[in-house]
Image 1 (spheres, rainbow, N blue to C red):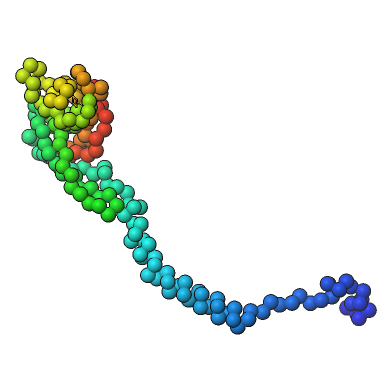
Image 2: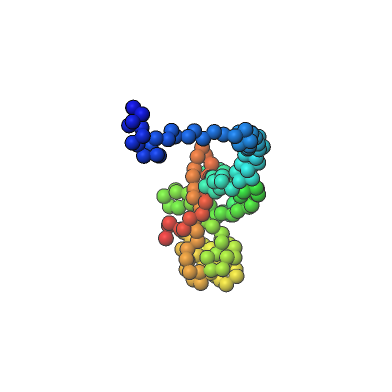
Length: 181
Ligand code: FES
């Protein structure tokens, strides 16, 4: 471009774009800041992970527990106690549960919860001489049949455990609403 033409251009177009330089102070600040952040992340990340990890882990509630040999189960309800290992965050426990386990006429094994559906007392089997072959709750006299069907007092049938039979043993899982009545 000739000098004549340059003189005709507006002032802003004639100026060369200025390069932004980093000062020594800025360079040192960025370098030290980056290094400090990198060094701090080393111990911090495992600590954060340790703190929140149990909260992120899924609760192992669906596990089945071995309760009794299949050959011992008959059509007569029998109460069995069993423990379930539970992990809730940092807290581990082994609470005890109870189930009434029996077979139906088709030889299918099922397990009923012993918790009365009226107000939560513990039921028994054949514990009222006036009404044989029934579950009865001693607190307010609720009665249930062999399938857990509510006969008097209680508003709903007894809950059932998930049942799995494997290798000659009965395993129980979580509770579910009664599917037999
Ligand atoms: S708690 Fe069982 S009858 Fe009331």
